[in-house]
Image 1 (spheres, rainbow, N blue to C red):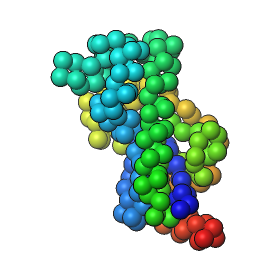
Image 2 (cartoon, one colour):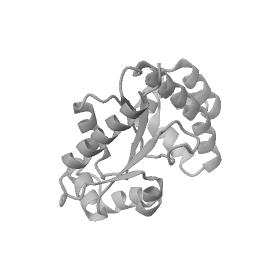
Image 3 (cartoon, helix red, strand yellow):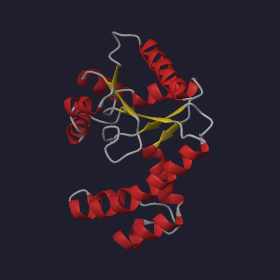
Image 4 (cartoon, one colour):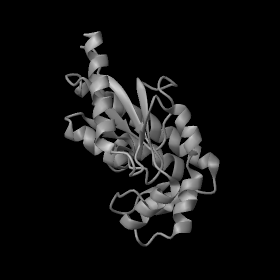
Length: 204
């Protein structure tokens, strides 16, 4: 059976990519949340847990076996080589997990993968198309402050500055969804949904 079409959805913090993915779910399209799944795997995948402890030592997990996220972040934040070593063990496990998940969705016309970091379709990944969700910076900051009131504007701006720029993200995009509150979101998503269904129908 042919694998379903694979569509990537990405966007900066506060752009609304999760909202877009919830709409795809409502349209009965499976969504793989790569960042959430990676968190789950660090807690539950025995191979990955062993590899993380090999890279970072036993402090990477607390006495109950829970991933010590705050401690890990403090270790890798100022040590790029350690961060690279950590990513080198996490990414292959997420990749294998994604591939297994896609195989389970073989009966679906297409699937969506949501991730904060993404390459263009076909750049060493299995994606067929990439959707970039974008919104003005001021609106993104306002959204984040609303959902996370204890974060200051400076903190949020710092996170945005550490992510790739909107211009770089647009270079990855096969499609752009504008989530700027001046254009309706739903028709943009429905239009893409119908286009993907048409693309799949051509291959059958």
